[in-house]
Length: 105
Ligand code: FES
Image (cartoon, rainbow, N blue to C red; front, side):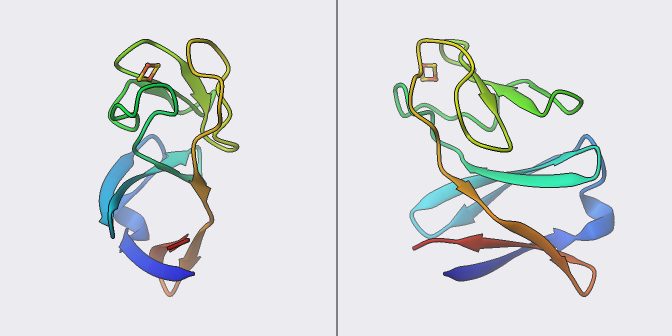
């Protein structure tokens, strides 16, 4: 596992999202009402960008901008077609005032 520092905690308040490069991937880190979730920015349906889609911080759901599949940000599991496979998720923690993601290489 590799750890990536995302940003100071106060820069990622509730309802905010950050896109960060992580090796060959890009990761979206979301704050759903104080709980942090990270997913790979790649839809499991057609490899399109996912984290840039509209998202609902209360439901903690992101909508793929290409074909509209809705994904649970906590589990990465799609809630509607056409996607049917989960996207990668990564553990997020807060350490010394920084948001940190553990990224599997
Ligand atoms: S690329 Fe995301 S639903 Fe098709």
